[in-house]
Length: 369
Image (cartoon, rainbow, N blue to C red; front, side, top):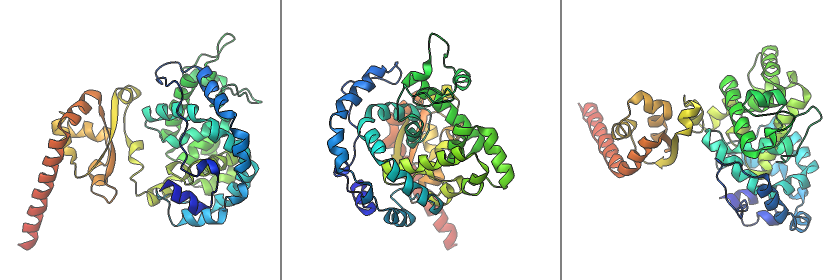
């Protein structure tokens, strides 16, 4: 599917010919440890020797933007469509930054692997990793002209507010694990305030005060309507994020859409994970498994010894989404409850199907009468 999509988009890059996979680090470390920057740097250095030859094969002119817009307009594999107001900017951005983006693509695997694992722990979309690309090109040594530091370009006070040490002797903004955890907390907090990923990306750059001002001035919470009330840098930042994701993924996602676009195009199925009312402690002591089929929340709750309200906090809209055409769900449960689910999942599925059949027969009998 991925290769077909790339062909449709007209991307003829050698390194993508068989489907891009991030290189596996020679030494895998847990995100619970302080991931040594030396490991990331070593992996990147090992990959860099092949970069010149591969870049010579990469031609931005083969990236057919009209086809990109047409392909995504009729729906990619995830249903997300590129907003036409982004097309011209993304076309120029990709052509101007092609080599730099391909370099990050070819050498960023270890960093991306780490970032994705932490984002998943905080129930955040993995595509938010591209924010670190436009912030710093994934470099822990990055320093901005205004004093932002590290892969996530955190300002000193923001970093301290998020629990990082920043003083004359230590700067944890350069620590990949700690800074990524801090960024995840910040992004989650911004989403809880704004409820829209494009507004979150804008606020990450300029702060919530400027975004709220733009909302008031425009009378809209739609980024494409309020963008001209934002600082120019923030407006561009959002479009850079969208463009980078399209280059790396060949398609958009929930993070390249406004909230209304996401609800319309993704039918809410990609939004439920952001409706979970869970504390950081609950998130850290829970696990997630993908399920599909005719599971019922009431049966799962009974087998896992949970009341319906608690199950609903961890898994909002479960029955609604499982009854839809896209009947798959990232089931999240506390660790001990997940053990019970996995030990009984076949009985749970069987009983769920029997209960649904029974309900269906009762409805049919009522209809006949």
